[in-house]
Amino acid sequence: MSRPPRARGSVLDAFEQILIDGNERAATMDATARAAGVSKGGLLYHFATKDALEAGMIDRLDGLVDEDVAAIAAASEGAVAYYLRSSVLTADPLDRAMLAVSRLAQGGSVAAGTALQRTRDRWADALRPHVRDEAALNLVLLVSDGLYFNNLLEAETAMHLPVGADLDALIALVLHAVAE
Image (cartoon, rainbow, N blue to C red; front, side):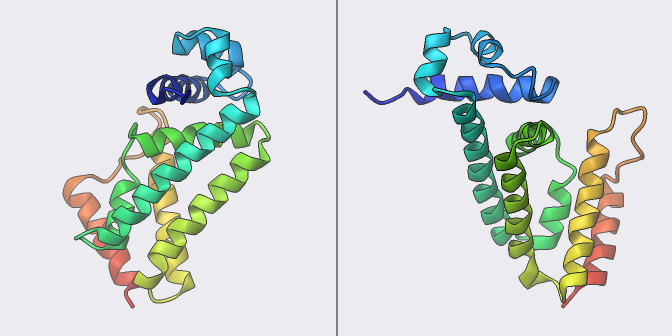
């Protein structure tokens, strides 16, 4: 019998939320089953171990990165502009998966750390053809990191995030600096 995708997704959603709200230690199998509204047996049907649950979360991230890399390649505004603009998005599925896998990495998961590095490498590979050299690529990646990190700060401690015309001006400045 195949595993119902909705129940599996609900378990991953619950695990992801626990990781985002707390940390890797709070994301126990029991807490995940409770949050997903499934029995422990129901959880074990989909994920036999916590390692399997973590692998499921990493697989979710990998799938979302596949979609993002495709969107980077197809972006009508250009790969670099799309990548920077998407760095200020919050609470979308990719952002949530990144946060959850980051929590796993912070808890010592080598597989999660490897997944995050793989994500960064894939983004770099998608952007590389659109910048003049590795220094320009690093500029784009680091500006994106700064935008993304600032999104994680509480509203009262965050610097003013560029939006609208301000974000357009920042993107234009970066595009000018990295043009081939």
